[in-house]
Image (tube, rainbow over all chains, first blue to last red):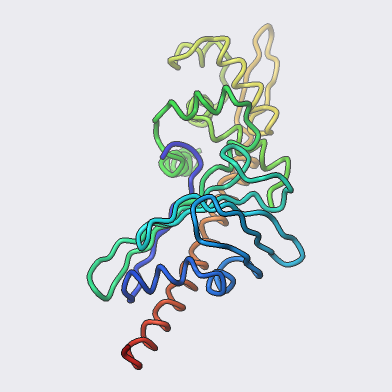
Length: 145
Length: 115
């Protein structure tokens, strides 16, 4: 993925369907993400999440049980989260075996929020190195100075 | 959670062409726009535009030397950008660790009472 994506992963000692429940059920989401979660897990569904004293809209994008789940949010702004003004959180679940699941999360979209549409399009058309590689190289270069 | 200044920073640094410009500035110190234009696959005009955006985001600064304008990286601001990204990543590591704990606990409970 080009650009500013944060990508992290973890290995969980539980079957994929258990991990799926943990990341998609509102009463579970409220334990690892927002303080309060109102969400129907259906593509296109609009929900709401609250963090401390601030709340914001959430839109579900992909629901592909038990391997893919994604939603957009742009907390704390009042606008509807759409591509370009919001952050996209994507979860990918990969069963390693019956008892273990690899869970990967990607958060992207930070840089697009302030861009004009033409620039977003050009950006989408380009496939160059990702942010991570850039960051690594910068760190190396900065260390040499 | 995200401020106007953050948005400008992400916008500036998120673009691959601007990262190329930034890269050259980081590795070569103080250079001019024409020097940069000779080393990137886009026009001198595009270089100038990218420099404006980078400067507005506080990532680079300029200095006049004779008839030339020289650009250089503002290391502090760049460090700030990398720190913020690292913090966002750490925040996800914490969330993933919580998900792991929740899922593993739920799995252990499922095993205790088989359906």
